[in-house]
Image (cartoon, rainbow, N blue to C red; front, top):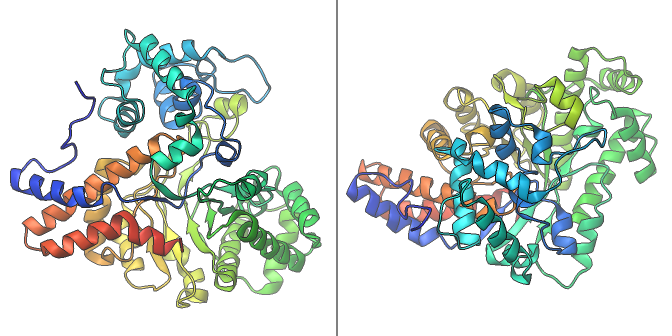
Length: 469
């Protein structure tokens, strides 16, 4: 028995399936370019064994524990830490048993594909996870994790990862990236500059973070000019120490502004004082996106905007467990009006690459594809987060290709904290893209030799070029 069908995600028509399989066979073993994600750089720096199966697959993965929480499983029972340091389950086997007894909840979901891929291809498992097999699974995976070939660096090489980017806040000291750089290991692990904590006035730590950035750089961040200079210095630090090639911005909206100097300076003063209204805070974030774009033109960092997540929707979970615990929910997002100030300020500059993501699929054909199909700075990021699924990837191609084509997109990135899911997610993307290309060939819209070239670009070339890797 195997957990996965060899022809999964390919078309049901026999001719198209054969072509999709042929295309897939030419790209399935290409190196993985993972230009945006959230794996912990400490894993690669220290190269220690993962603690246990639950700590690898369950406790850190919001895709997993949010589904269990939706069926009434308490996050404390899954070992998710509390902000007050209160008691949570610490027995990995008990957490795993709870997870296994609810594994049926993942039927038909992308998480099920990723998990089964990891079980089969990383750990060599050929039986389905259930309450009955839970202990066997736990013992088998725990035994594997104790071996040197299952440590992070060995898995990195086994997964054929050519480059992976983590994401750190602007004030991070990048100690783990320093350790990786100074080690004898040659795996390419780079960072990305995530300045939300020093750009969003509605974050409780905003003023403290800005002050810390001033201490780190020697600039007076109580002034507008010093604040901007401090950003430039931190970006340079991220490039030099962490090898950064990109920035990442996770704002609630895609709003941008291009304010006159005096207005921006006054708004910054209100942000530091904590007196911004909600609209003023949004305007400040929007203006800073334009400032970040200008800095990208100066220093060459690729810019990514990830708007539209209504974060921490569950107040009780936020209070008990903190941010990013599975209760971020997609919302409607405007791009045409929101991006216009930034685009009219710098959007025709060929030195700028701005990659757009969305959680609002209705914007693909209506807004994002037409924008990327016109403005030279814009590229479309792949189907993201809630739409990082076979269906979401297919819809992305169907709704964007007709207007933006393939070459105004950036291939695939996995955006994950779950290390073992990286090859699984890339495999899904490769299969879906090959299925889509086979359909274009079968309906006379693409020549077969072109399909082979596009498959390679979608798998490898576009991400490598877009992210300057």
